[in-house]
Image 1 (tube, rainbow, N blue to C red):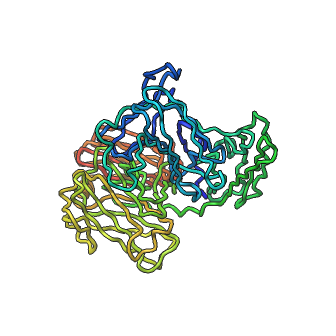
Image 2 (image 1 turned 120 degrees about the vertical axis):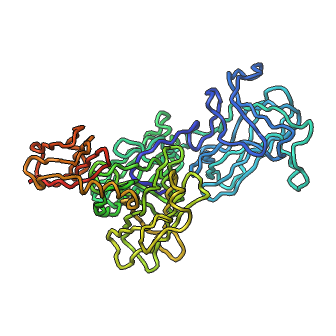
Image 3 (image 1 turned 30 degrees about the horizontal axis):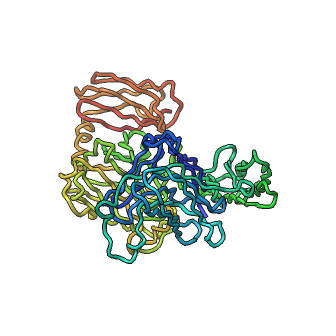
Length: 540
C-alpha cells in the first residue's frame, strides 16, 4: 500500500505502466540502465530489409564485458510489467553471432512473486529475427515487476562458476526493436486515469489499486474521485464509483472489463493531517546569517535544496507570511541543507553562535538530534548533539550552540574544525534518528536556523551609539538619524513579512512616512555605510 500526501507531482515514462511497449522510434527512448560492461544507444536502423523501423536500440556487449552483463528498464516501486495484462512478449533482434542465447528476466517484484527468467536462442546472425517468449509458467499470471532485464549472449553454462568475461571473439553489436507485451484487452479491467477533483492522483499507476491520501488539517469534505477505464473505447465504460462520505473515509472504483466478468477494485483512503504547530518565536538578534527564519527583517540565504536521508520532508509557512519558515522530517535519518551546485556557499567565519528552534508533539527522556556543519572541504566539520527537554512536548524549544573556535563563551559548543575554515559552509546536516532517541519515528519541525554573535554583532554595537529612530511609537512619521553615516536603504515589513515601504535616502538622515500604514507592529531593516540594523516600529 502506498502512502502519499495531497501533493501533485509528475511521473514521466516512456511506456504505459504495467504493459511493456518499446518501439525506439523516439530517439530519447533508451533503457534506464546497463551493467558490467554493456553500452547502448538509440540509432538509425542499419538493416531495413526485414525490419522497416526507422530507429532501433543498439547494444554493445564487447569481449571484455562480464558474461552475465546486460541492460534493462525500470520504474522503481511501480509495476513496469503486469502479467495480468498478458504473459507473452514479442521482439525483434539482430545478433552478431548465430546460436547465442538472450535471457529475459523479471525482478524486483511489487507483490512478492519470485524473479523469473526466460531464455531463448537466436538461431541466425546478421539478420532481423522475430522472437516470441512467454512467462505463462508463472503461478497465476498476476505478478507485477518493476524491472525488466535483457542479457544478450548469456552463457547458461557459466552459472556454475568459472566464467569471467564474454571471451575473445564472442562479443559484438546487437540490435533490438519492437519489444512488446501482448495482452487480451477483453480482460483488461484497469484504469488509465484516476483523479481527485479533476487532477490525476499523485503516484497513479494502473496496476496500483490502493492509495492513501493525507488531506490538509481541517479538511472535512474529501475530493471527488473519478476514473477512466483503460478499455473504455472497447466496450468497458463501466466504472462504478462510490465517493467517500467524509474525512476520514474511503472511495472505491469498481472497474469491469469488456468481457463483462473480469473486475478490478481501486480504493482511495482519505485521512486528515495532524494540526500544524504554531509559528516559532520571532528571533530578536539584529545581525545574523539567516538560513530559514520567520523574522521578516532578516534576509534569508534560503535552502536551495534539502536532501532527505530517507525521511519524509516538507516546508511550511507557519506564520502565514507567504514565505516558508519551518521544515519538517519524519522517519529515515533526517537530511541536509545542500548548497553544492547552488553556490555561493555561506560564509560564517564572523559568527559565534548557531541557533535552531525545535518542535515535536511527543518526546521521551534522552531524545536528541545531531547537527553537523561541513564546509566545501567536507573533510572538515563541526558537530554537536542537542538534547531536547522531554518535559516540553508541543512547544518550541530554542537552542544556541557556540561555534568551535569562535570564543562564544557558551557552555555548549560544537566540536571539530575551527570557525576559520567555514568561509564556504556547504552542508548543514540534521540527524534526529540518533542512538537513545525516539525522534526518528516522530514528526519533527525545525525553524529559525541562523548564525549570530561573534564579530557579526560588532556592526550593531557601533550603530547603537550612532543611530536613532524617533518617535517610536509614532502615529505617522519616524525620523532616522545617524552620526555622519550614509543611509543607503530602508525596507519596512509588516508582521506577515510583506514589504510595505522601500526607501533609498543616500543621506545621513531620513524620514519614514507611515501615514498610509494601518496601526500595528512593523520591522525596519536600515542599511548604512557602516552596517545594517533591524528595528521594531510601532504605528499607533
